[in-house]
Amino acid sequence: MGIQDVFRVMSLYDRLVKEKERLGKKALRNPRTNQELLDRKRWERVYAILTRRYEYGIEDVMEQYRYGDFRDEIETVNQRR
Image (cartoon, rainbow, N blue to C red):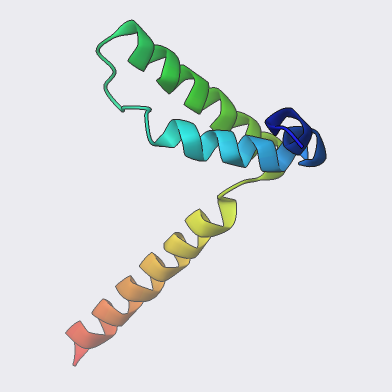
């Protein structure tokens, strides 16, 4: 079973997540060369597809907001004491 056969078995979602992880190691926030720019654009495209089509990462962001609200509430209670 070759690598092409493995990709045929994997779902589109799994392939996108795998590609995002692979590109995430190479994609720089401030690309300087053409190759770095291409890697960043590919990463942004894959991430956009994951977030729009599969709502990838939405739960993590919402959990951070909830934690932030909870932390702020604890601070205000502690300041009142």
